[in-house]
Image (cartoon, rainbow, N blue to C red; front, side, top):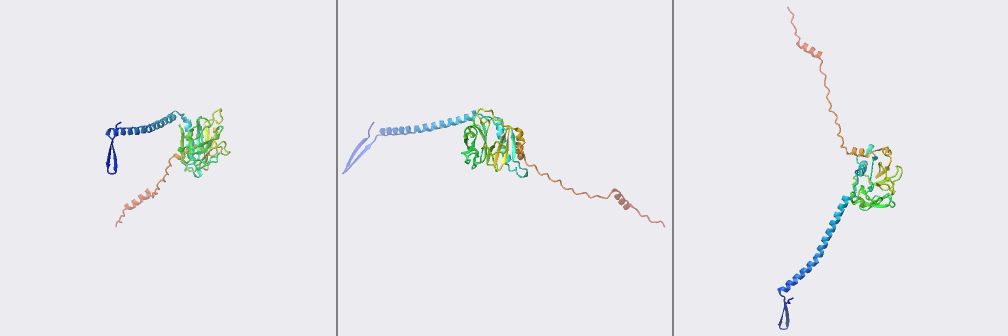
Length: 309
């Protein structure tokens, strides 16, 4: 490597040293410095590219999981939709007054195995089985199926109000908040006033059995599928009680209950226009009779003759 030239100058008591570098040496130092900077940037760029590849791979994997995860069959989706429809009808602003309906029933409320219908309470409402309040994105209710009860988090997409979800629960008694957020899970926010909590009842007169979690199979491992031809939805203040029954006749004869579908259709029908009263008719004045008209005409045409003298 060529060195720079050194020049020594003396002026009185002062002594100066000047170093003059040639162009080749400056050029080589610039190239070396640039190479060092380039070597430092390459790992950063490589890390960013690797991170982007990882994110893209995760996104692709989640997309494939949604595609290939089991979808609820038509009957299960219909049963879920009927429960949402019935709850909204019972708490409709139109369901008031002397004709208010407090119970409705749904026949053939089928839910296939590995799926569950879950009712999440409004934020701030305590679980029926735990002394903890429901929190958006956190604990809300407790599932009661299987050997061990599990806490269930409220899905973020439910918002802060009451919400009903059809969850792909997978294994029996293995429900959590993620099961209602991922795969082909469906959630429906109930935009009604006065509803804040759900419960599942085993009998009509019994106390609330638990928070609302209805599985598509029996909670006893190895047992036959649960027979549930129908359910009753009962409005009890701000608590919506869900009563399961294997007796279709019992469901249809539940005191004061009407089909939930009929109740929903009633409130969805546009109001009938009020019938207008027919215009009042002015009574016709009766004119003179025909005889009266002829008599009058004869009197007007009568000629008076003079006597002959």
